[in-house]
Image: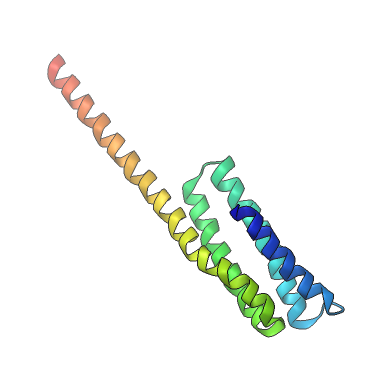
Length: 130
C-alpha cells in the first residue's frame, strides 16, 4: 500500500541522486535530507505505533513536514525530476499531518470527557452517601 509507495519514491530519489556521479553540493544536501527523512519516518512510527504517544507523534510530524519541505527545496536545486517524484507525497503529507493533529485532539477531547464523566459520577456518589 501506501508504505510501499513511500519507500519506492525514496528509492527512486536516492537512485537519481547517486547515479550522476560523486555526491557533492546540492545533491549531497538532498541525499542527506532524504536519509534524515527516512529516519524521521521511523521515529514517527515508533512514537505513534509503539509508544502510542499522540502528542509526541504530532511534534515529530511537524518536524518531519519541515524536513520534507527542506528536501523539496534541495531537490529544486539538485534534481527537478526527483522533486516531481516527491510531489505527490508532499501533497499526501498535508493530509497526513492534519490527520495526526486531529487524532491527538480527539484523544484530548476524549480524556476531558472521561474526566468530566468521572467527576459527575463522584459527585453523585457523594450526594447518595451524604
